[in-house]
Length: 482
Length: 48
Image (tube, rainbow over all chains, first blue to last red; front, side):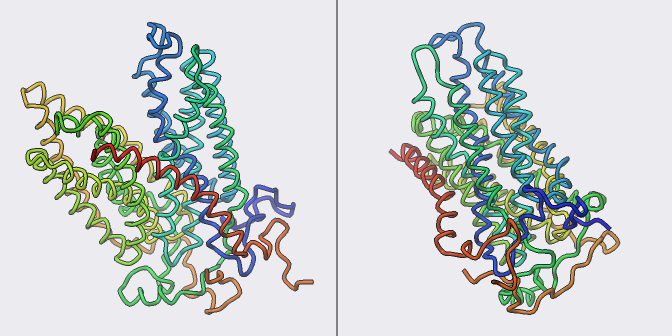
């Protein structure tokens, strides 16, 4: 019978990219693996910084005076949307392939797609063909995003079965941090390549394409997978957690395949949990800069609003690691209950900070909301692992990420639609977000109910039941204590 | 000769070295720290 750990190539020697070539030997230090995961996520997180190319891409022909032949901002906005849609689709489609071939091949494919996406886009800039940018950065780069997003998560969750929340938080934190690197890097490069006749976008795309490919290859070359049946011997802490009824070595979750997982109500409840958490947060991210300026007219300048957006990215990134690590201690269900209840409360209260003229209060409130937005992304793989085991967790995670694609359309659409409706009906700008906040709070209450309904998966869906205690403490497969 | 040689492309003993560990973490944390610093620097405008 074929399993994800079986050599699919039969008796032939495994290729350089194959899973069999990267199985860690005895005594391997598992803390060597997270940098490989971070290298991938820090690179692909650049997608969040794509907006820095928006203005330069609309001035390619006219220069400082935009020409009618130049692309519009709406044309450019499609690039990001296509990339996110293909992220979700490729994660869903290629998830099982990843589980079969292993993370090195998937990371290499991700690096090749993401890097070549930049190069194709550079050609599109030189030839002034927008479809080449849609194809390059959007479709091919988007496929690279999807592959790159799920590969490190699936790998780390297997290396840290005793701390799956921390492990996935570590990887997904990189995706949040990627924007913080990509944005100033792109600005630096464009400033370097800019001339009187060109904004330097094509040259920047080429440099970033090659640079990110090499950076991601560091991850592909250094990633390792644990040998089949491996479990960390230093499981004292997990055994303590077992006393509180949370996931532990003794209660290692059973294996459910991706095809079987989508037949369970748990998968769709968690799909709803992610969808509602992301919908509530993503609309705010998209509208953050104009929102703070309109809620505090005359007090917050465009420059300060840009600072607010940066600060939200920081909260988003820190929340990814912080909340998911905390979920190892308090449990996944409790963590999401906190997200939904605290988030709904903060959404309901923040309109009052506008009336109180409290900028610091507003920033703090949204900072916490965005930390929970990031925390939701980072904790969901561990929640999936608790429910479905690690057998095909990458593939299941990939399918669940379609919730992100759906929320990416729903969230900003909802915020913008409600705001415009309010303004058309004579509501002053400073009050235009109040109803939006209450709607977001309502969505989070629905998310709270979805989370409450999650129960352990019925045993009839289980494909593989792992042994409760694969290795005695101190076995040779244990990681070093660092 | 070791009784348990590492796989052909598997990790060698040196991979457990502290230097290797530090190098790999520095490879990713250096650009991340720079990005965080740039973000904090621009965010300060909010409180000026």
